[in-house]
Image (tube, rainbow, N blue to C red; front, top):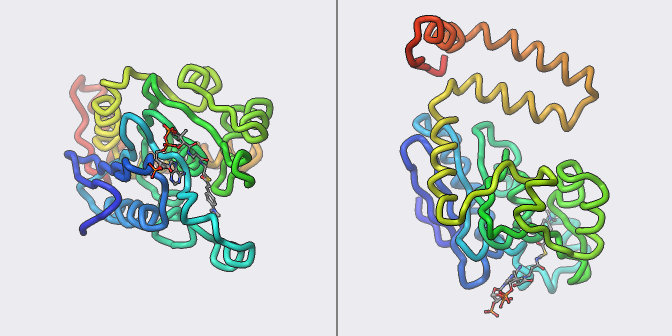
Length: 261
Ligand code: DAK
């Protein structure tokens, strides 16, 4: 498939998606979001791929939804179409992918860009990363999870301040607050993201899916429900050949060879 707004390649078992509208700070136009969805769907159905990375460039992961696409929309346009993320193969593909997706963020991750990074499974940030929900400055509010995912990630005080004032968080504050898993020098971000995604891709795919599902249940359940889900999922891993292989390999002091069965 050919793409106009993103660069897509398989790097070994890692599906690599680079947002590529540098002239507009990788603003998330409808066309770009649609392409991201198509790329995710293609990697999701490709057996050779075990994990994905979404990244931008050194200046910007993405500076938000494309304001030029949005400015003339009316309430009724947005309400009826669920603009701009109304395509099943766009934002929904990111939210529902079963393979892990890492956001590798350098530079600005603002508005929909911050929301896209947060919709990934975790964020690796470079020391130049800046996160923010500045929609308030242009007369609107976050619309793709910013008020919800940011609050869950960093707590009410910081999320409220960011959504009410548009203040950006730098990488260090984002790591302290729990928004990003780690900070890397900007020159090392790409290699590290590839390494981490590659490690995940070599693990047992069904067990990786179970781990991802179980962590995500923590955001949608009571503690008791979550613990019950985890216990059932844990037991389910023992129905896989890969659990037998993983534990035998440990006991025999060799590397496991997972078959995704
Ligand atoms: N949209 C369109 N173009 C953008 C853009 C954006 N979000 N951000 C930057 N650009 C363009 C600029 O217009 C400029 O284009 P030219 O003038 O050169 O043609 C070019 O990128 C370079 O930007 P600057 O000249 O401004 O560069 P600076 O280094 O001075 O500043 C900046 C960088 C990132 C701080 C600044 O560009 C900026 O503040 N950008 C806007 C950030 C922002 O307000 N983002 C929030 C957008 S609203 C929804 C889901 C999601 C959303 C809505 C609904 N639903 C599911 C319903 C999301 C909404 C948003 O994200």
